Image 1 (cartoon, rainbow, N blue to C red):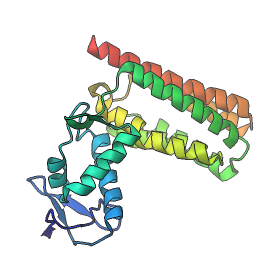
Image 2 (tube, one colour; image 1 turned 120 degrees about the vertical axis):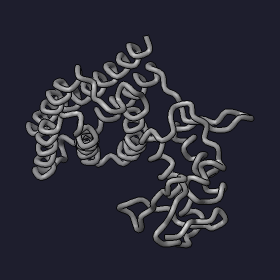
Image 3 (cartoon, rainbow, N blue to C red; image 1 turned 30 degrees about the horizontal axis):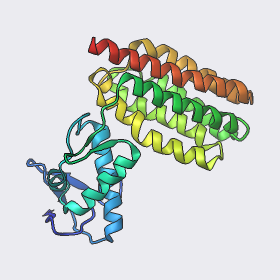
Image 4 (tube, rainbow, N blue to C red; image 1 turned 180 degrees about the vertical axis):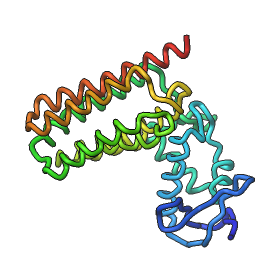
Length: 258
């Protein structure tokens, strides 16, 4: 097992990619192998790793991202970290404060409502388009996802439930065939829904109980409309589903802060 020196342009991997990375007890990155890749590729890898770390809650809202500390965490030089932070600023996950540095963005209840409203508009349009294109195999997959979600509502199954929820939405909007909608929603789902759940204590390790039953009902209504080829009903139910989730999330944050 080799430690990656900071002056090496090395490839940082996570399980499931080309290699596997590990952190030692001091938080340093260890690699089973040391690879040498173009700097541009390294920047993309560090960007993904830092994004995932924020999504997991390793870096909390308002926490400063000091380049030296982040570079040390991932076992790389500061240059790819600097470029990764710039990318995450552009995505809205991180904010740059002049003369002070970069920190993880802090979202208010109003921000959450705005984000869900934006998603509702985009996914409503994508769902309407998908209703005319979904295959029987894709619809069967949606039914399978909903059934699996219904059987995994325990707190211990929360990570799986949320992953299935993401698959549900992704399966629908990916079927729309609308490249702009797909790219935009991939970016939104790649950052904010995932990050929001782990960002706040009220949702980090538990669902919102008042949403559980409604969530499943709304999913079933969306699938039913898609089975019937009713694009208008499917789109309307999707928009309502996302807006309702946003309102409950924002209300939970306000109650927690009260």
